[in-house]
Length: 140
Image 1: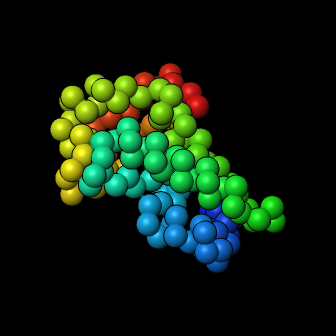
Image 2: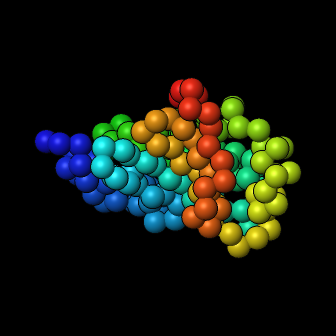
């Protein structure tokens, strides 16, 4: 089975389980396949908080949901989301991001997405405009 088919089955399985269904419907864009490149995106809600607080809240919510899952459930997707957010919390300069991009201070209706590509670069986009990515030598 190739990667696209196995991922498709994984997504279908995750969507059939209610705790993960809410994660997908509310905040998660599955890995997008563009050629040989894969990309995972997580929507962040900055209506009432800045990007750092939103990432912390999402991370804590995912950790909580992870431990509520049954042992038999496939946890690969939620684990990859947790890993991405953990790396973002540990390595991004949130003060610089907030100072440089006022949209990341919170309170707006902008679409903020944090993601990671096949090259392991963490990216941040505002309204589908890439505004930040980690250095090319950065590895998760």
